[in-house]
Length: 168
Length: 168
Image (tube, rainbow over all chains, first blue to last red; front, side, top):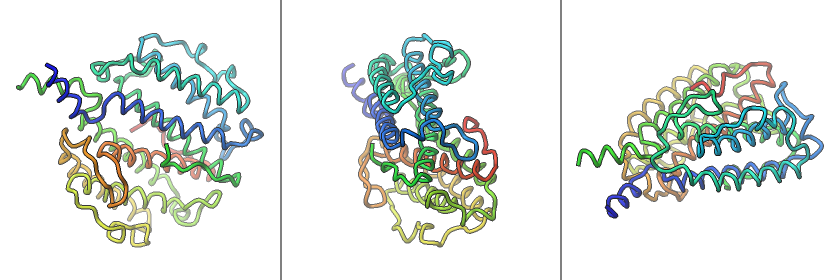
């Protein structure tokens, strides 16, 4: 039994711990992008009619915070409760970073409650998105990556060098 | 034995086939971004001194093409061989899409040669990047996502609506 479990672990495509580390590596990079972003451009700088940086980050905070708790516990908060997009979220860079760190801790707390047997389970995330647990986690990571990539263009267009993408 | 294999498969965080589908889903989205990009802006449009769109896509083609073959076979081509970045790659949108489709097929051919037991193996990708097979595949996907996110800003700034991010 012990041996079987070891075998299962070793031939995993990715282990839960590796996936958590991968996610938190992305979040550490996004945190550096928040740090690099000029305070006075957080809310009013845009390209091509897109959301300002703070709107992108608010979405990432909401998805990660509501998402990891929902996946781990089945408790999905309503849009109003987790909705920084409704304007109740952090406004300054300091507040953004503090909230970011709070969510980082929350992920470290809730993620390990998702057991190896749960990743293929079907869920209705936020009461409306159908998929498996693993598909949701990948979506949260991908969505962060997508919007962070956009933030890199914002930074470059402001003459600021973003952090290296490959450093996590 | 049959039962054990089934069990291993079912409690995987993600299966090889799911990871392949995930990657190809991202690639299908990037293909739609290539289709949406104006031909006359492929090579000369930039924001903040970044590479033009064709340069971003050339990198994605090189990484995916050289990467999947290297991971599956251990045969890493030199930078010159796989280097569209050196200027030997596709120039027009038609050529880009044709090359993209060629790489899609190549991934479908080589990816299944990476067995479940290989994802945790250490590799020196392209003869210079240390990591595991799974970390490399995630890097290829993340890097595509990152640059595609940047391409969304290019498109928006040109007044063009990009394809929906969540449609794969």
